[in-house]
Image (cartoon, rainbow, N blue to C red; front, top):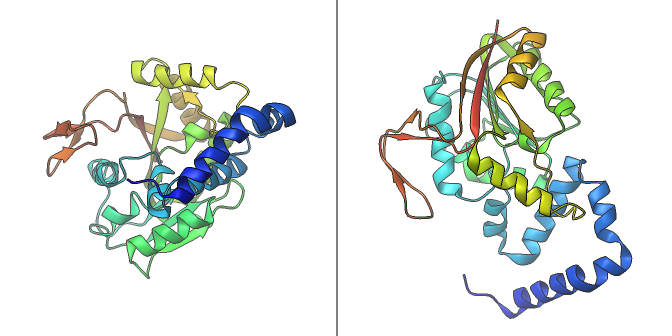
Length: 275
C-alpha cells in the first residue's frame, strides 16, 4: 500500500514519540502499568493502527491479520465442533467481524458479538449485513444474555489477552448463558508449542513498553482444572501445531502456503461442554 504524505508524517511523529518524548516523560512506564487493563490497551492499540494505516487496513490488523483467511477457518472450527445452522452463537471478542463475515454465509440462527472497541463493533455490524444479529459493547466481564440461551460461546484470541482470573470469570459467564449440552470453544497460547514460545520471547523484550496488548499463556492442565471447578466437561484439547480442522475448500495464507484437506488454527484449541 502506498504511503500518503499525511501517513508518512504520522509515522515520523510516532518515531519521535518513541525515541524522544516517551523516555523524557515516562509515558511508556505509565502505559506498562496499565497493560493489564485490556479495554484501555486494545483501544489505545487501535488508535495507533488508525494513525498508521487506512481505516480498513487498521480494523483488519486489529484482530491479528490474515483477516480473509482466518475467518473461514474459525467458522470451520465451530462447524467441526458441532455448530448447526439453526444454533445461537455468542462471539466474545468479535472484533471487526473476521468470524462474523464468513459465519453469516452459514448460520441461520441467532448471533451475538461483543467487543471492547466501538469502531470494530460498528465495522463488524456493517460487514455481516445481518440486521437480525446483535453487536454490543462489552461491559465488564459479563455476557449480555439470559441464562441457558446459547448453543455455543466462542473466545478466539480472547484469553490470550486477559489475566487468568478474568478468563475464569468469562468461562463462568459462558456456562451461565449456555444451554445444557452447549459448548465453549476457546483458543489459547501454550508454552510447549514452539511458535508460541517465540511470542513469549518477544514479550520479554517488550518489558517496560505498554503499547502492545498483554499476551497470556495457558496450558491443557490449567484448563482441565478450571473445567473441573466449573463442572464443565472437556471434550477436546488440540495443540496449535496439529492440523485437525477439515476444510471444505483449500485455504491460502498470506505467506503463500496452502492448506488443502486439514488445517490448524495456529493457537491451541479447547472445547468444553456444559453438563
